[in-house]
Image (cartoon, rainbow, N blue to C red):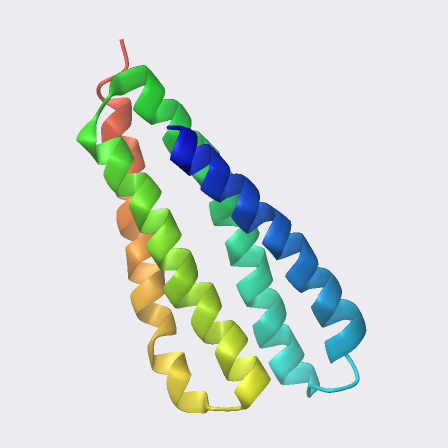
Length: 122
């Protein structure tokens, strides 16, 4: 549980920093479309940083393996989804966009696992 809280806090803080970086330093450097791609990465990183707190709570409440799966899926999904969008926006390598849907599927797995862990609540 403590690890997911720490990772959620770290990813949340990094999301705020990335958002500020995008809004100030990248606005003049990126095309409007690539800035939008970058901002999508920031938004989904923040959503799943917060989801890590839910996973941590479920781990504490249920000790369910599915809650652990959810937490790790949110971490991996963030790396794949947001990471690929950041890399694509910053490098222009559009081929990296093929990784993004994999991250999205991992996010969905995390949400399903989180829902399954709720079945263990008293």
